Image (cartoon, rainbow, N blue to C red; front, side, top):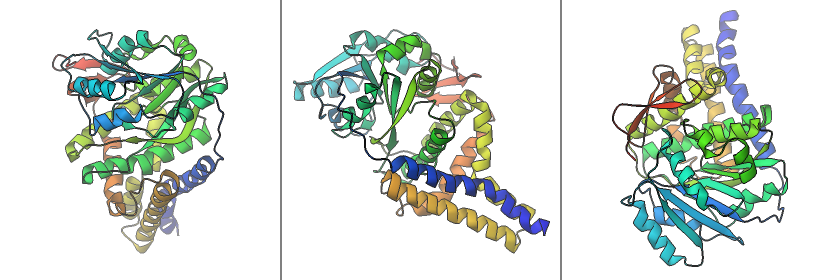
Length: 383
């Protein structure tokens, strides 16, 4: 009897976790929309290096906001950056929008994105600052949703969920599925179990007062996961973090599987260094090792196959519900057949993250140190 029960006990943690994320997701996404009417002036800081897929369309989406007063500040390290002509075209086509371009190559630490933010910050005119990645596209209500919660003075930061409904090949589908099947369920779990203590880098709105209290952007320049650190520092400074239910879109270009694996491994090693205990414990929610162990300890018996099948069915249901009901990205059921490969990729990067601390970011090689700080490794930095 014990041999029959063990396979089910092994798959119980990821099954229970998956089912609970459905409950937590329903609780979050089932909330009634809130309209505060609070429309404070906003400055959007957008660090850029090179061009992404549909860069002009991404940038233009920030110029078509249903909002009263906002400023858009781009920051790059070089006048020769390919993004500069795109930004100049944007300024010509949207003369009514307050757009500035800062070109400054000063370096303050190994995180060059944060260096751009430090260089752009003196040009910010307003007290609500939004940091948004260059590959992000938003709808016209984005600023209303991001700035509204600041009507409560206890809120120091508002971050947004992101999705990628448009995928260009199988590798990008695998990455987009990670947002839907792993990242967002994990955020729901964190939100319900411990409250929000971190930010998501796709979109982070922070008050000038909260940013000053943590030491400004300079406090982030030695960290790779500047988004996690910004949210966590603001949280520890005594401010409340809010998660917006308004999705932004991460616009992907065609990728190779090697490129996706490198980026996933960078994220994994960064999170392992930033939250070592929680990251290690997250292994019990991984479906691949649980299914394999259930089969192995049962000697590939009927009980083992049944337990593994129950886990697989749970993963399919959770993926479908998050994709179709909560995230609404259209990835499932079209790409549902890739879910086992997505789970294998997630487990591989989780396991590999414990073997080494080198990561590649924007063609530069870094060594991730305990606590999430980084140090340059290899060739001279490319700014």
